[in-house]
Image (cartoon, rainbow, N blue to C red; front, top):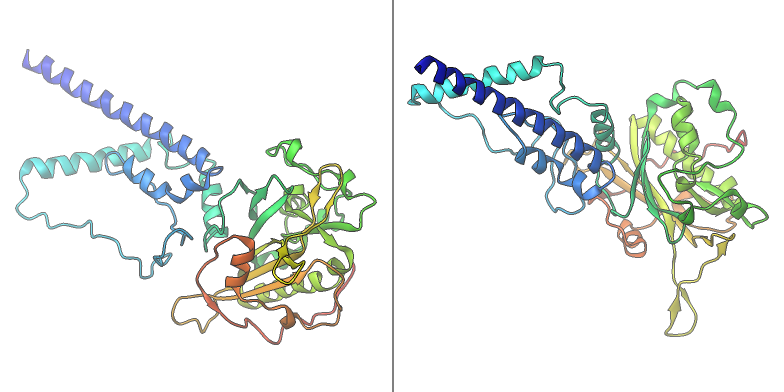
Length: 374
C-alpha cells in the first residue's frame, strides 16, 4: 500500500515538473517572439526570464546599457556587480542537500531532452544579434524593426526612419559577394509595414530628391542578404542628389575607415527637422514632402559614431556627432566643419543617446577620394 502511494507521489511530482518545464518553454518562446517587435519587452527581458525561472533554469541574456537607466553596466567579464549566489553549505540539513542534488539532476535531464526547453531556439541568435547592434541602447522606442545587420525605428507619419543603428565591422570589408556588384533597380517594400504608411518608387520619380541610405549598402558587400536589406524603404530617406554624391558619401567612407582601423564602430543615423526663423521672435519647422504618400524631406541629417578606442581607460567609448544640411554643399569642405554636440542632436531629434565621451575619433581620416562605382 505504501509502495503504491509512493509511486503515485513520484509519478505526480514528475508529471508536474515536466508540465512546468513545458510551460516555461512555451513562455520563453512567446516572450522571445514578442521582444523582437516590442522594445519594452526586449529591455525588460532579463527580469522576465528570471521571474519565469524554474528549477534554477534561467535565460542567460547579454545586458545592454539602456537609455532609460542612469546606471553603467559593463558587458562581458568586467565590472558588472551581481549579488553573490554562492552560499556556504555548512550546517545545511540532509533534506536541503537532497533537494539541491535533485534539482541538479533535473537540470541535467532537461539539458539532455530533445525538446529545447526554451534555452535554444532559432530566434536566440536574432535576440543576441540585436544585443550586439544595440550595445549602446535604443535612442527611441517607436515601432522598432530588426534586420540582419541594422535596427531602426520607423516614423509612419513621415514615411521615413526616426533613426537607424548599425554595427559596422571590419570583417565585412575583407571579402565581396559577387551578387552585391549589381545593386537592385528599385527599392523594396517591407511587408511588416502597411502600404498605407510606406513610400513607393512613384514618390521618388520626377523629384528633386533621391533615395538616401541611412545604413550604407557598401558596409555589407560581404553578404548579399544584408546588402539587399539596405535597399528596403524603411532605410531610405529623401536626400539632395548633390549631398548624396559628395559629402554624405565621404561621411560613409569615413565610417568604414574607422571600422577598418579599430575593428568595428556603432553608428546611429537619421533625419532632422530643424526650425527656421520666420520673424524676430517666431520660428517654424518647414520641410518639403514628395509624392502621393507625402514622404517627408528632412532639412538635415545626423550621424553619431561610437568607437571604443584603445586609450579609453575609463571604459567609456568615444563619440562623434555630425549634422549636415539636406542641400548642395561645397564638396571640398572638411568633414570637421559639420561636427556637432550630441546633446544638440538629441534636442532637435527628440532622441536620447549613450552618455559617452565626445571627442575626435581620428583627425587623419575622412579624406579618401570619392569613387562613383554605385
